Length: 299
Image 1 (tube, rainbow, N blue to C red):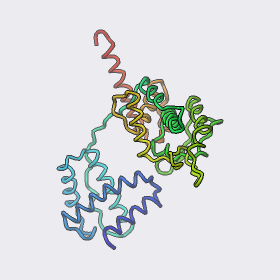
Image 2 (cartoon, helix red, strand yellow):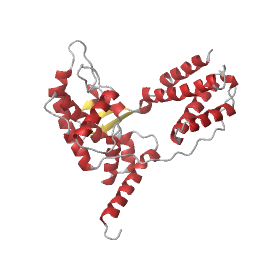
Image 3 (tube, rainbow, N blue to C red):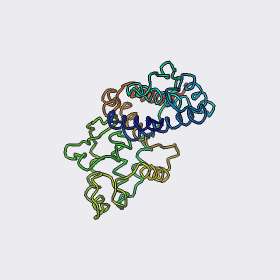
Image 4 (cartoon, one colour):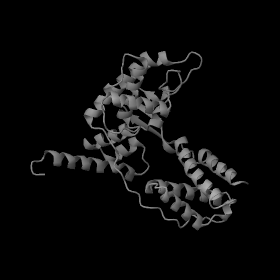
């Protein structure tokens, strides 16, 4: 079996047995493509049985020389470690050279968020008089109302929305289902989109059950959403750098600032570990300090 065959088997294992999302698998693919190319071209490795700890250390040094961040290097190590553990379980190799590789400490950056006036400006940016504008408005309202990921948003189906009950059903990382409450403002816009806009966007040739459709009547892509978001942020005169996660970060921070329970926010965001959610408590503390410094006369 060639090295590439073993890599393909690993990706099949991640998709079928571990049930990881396509986005997660793509990140593993990028990391392992870098790793295996380095082994083959630089170290002249033909079989994974030949790989030693020294080869992995050299590869990590190579990443550092390319000025990769400690976060990127740590992610590569996790991918490499998972791959070699799979090879052991699959009896493809008899040794794991990644066992004693240390993961570098990653600098934890605080997520970028919008303040309330910026969120309101962004939510008001779409033109509700057009089918696509009403769709964009509904998408932004749902993102800010629920804190779901963009990948989860574009995968929502019509049947996942329960307007009378006031919640959406979402499939997150690791195929885990969660039920998230939706506020009345977002529900009103969503109902308007379903009644007036979605039927106009739907294709007569093929019926797509995706909740949010593009102008071809198909489910919207991540790239399509990202392109629209950038255009809407410019229209709203938002100077901050926006990412597809910005509304998710803002959702969590604004909830905590207004007294929400950390565990409840963790559940709505779909975080497996509460330490991931705790980053937002640091954001709220930083914002409090900024307010104090700006407005206290003797700060």
